[in-house]
Every structure is written in C-alpha cells, then in structure tokens.
Image 1: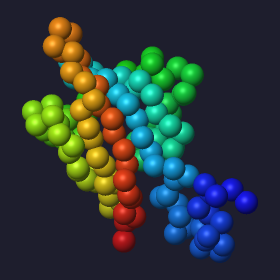
Image 2: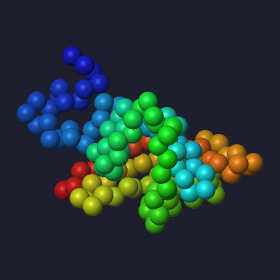
Image 3: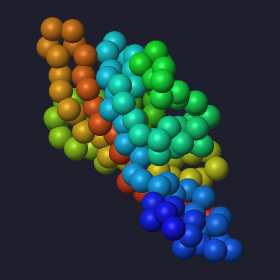
Image 4: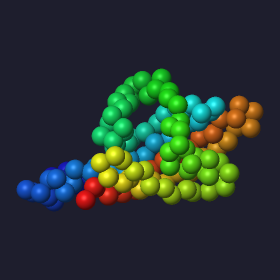
Length: 130
C-alpha cells in the first residue's frame, strides 16, 4: 500500500481526489525581464501544470522551458507584490471551469546585477468547481 497515493482512501469515489496530488506541488523558478524559467519542480507540480495549464514540462529539459510571465493575471500581481514586499504572498489561481488553486509564492533571492529573481511556488490546495 502506497501511503502517498490518496486514491486508496476513495475506493469508488475517485472523482473526489481528481484534484489532489501525491505530494504538494512545488517549483523553483527564475524570472528576468518578464521571462519565466523553471529551475526545479517536483512531479506533482509538473502534473499540476499539465492538468490546469496544458503544459508538459519535461524533467530532463526543464531548464530549456522558458515562457513569458502571463499578463494581467493573479500570478503576475503576486510576483510584483512578492518582489516589493519581499514576503510570502498567497493568491488564488482561478480557472475557466471554476476550479481555484490556492497558491503561495515566496521570494528566494534577487540578483541586483542581472535583475533576476528566484521564487518558490507551492500549490496549497485546490477547490474543484462546484
């Protein structure tokens, strides 16, 4: 019995656990000039990105995956707040189907020379659409 597999508690109600992961989805990313680069992330975060953003992040080529910071989003606002306050920022990531991901963002480091900033991001909970 795998104690990281939450589906064992659901038996015939697996749909209850469709938005849960084996562990907390966590990533470390670098942002520079509105470009986002994944430095590290766990399997649960890669699954989260696949399920909700339809992005496949290959663990072997993760450093090559660079994208724009999504404009006019709660994520962009949280990034700016995190840089300004240098504190934890909690925000809700809302999806078109009504699902809400509750996320925490933390500034890990700022490089004053290159203007790059490193952040950790963790998906705390996911509230399914009702």
